Image 1 (cartoon, helix red, strand yellow):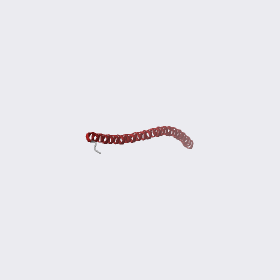
Image 2 (cartoon, rainbow, N blue to C red):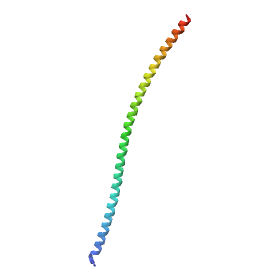
Image 3 (spheres, rainbow, N blue to C red):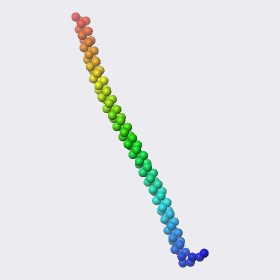
Image 4 (cartoon, rainbow, N blue to C red):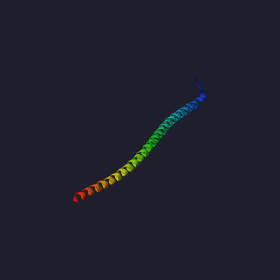
Length: 96
């Protein structure tokens, strides 16, 4: 079936459709990559949020441990002072 004068136009139209299909395919691939990037970014944000919560918890626990350590140090200092006073009284009583 010869189309005569329409043949060059049809060839140009087929070439244009081929170019359009290639462009659409490239766009679909690019959008898929962007979707992957967006998903990866969301996952990284979730990880960051989780790490922030864990860091806050660790810092809070650290503050609690530091306070307990300070209190234990004070208690030991008082106990040491009391023992020293008792030992001094015993030594003083033995010296009499």
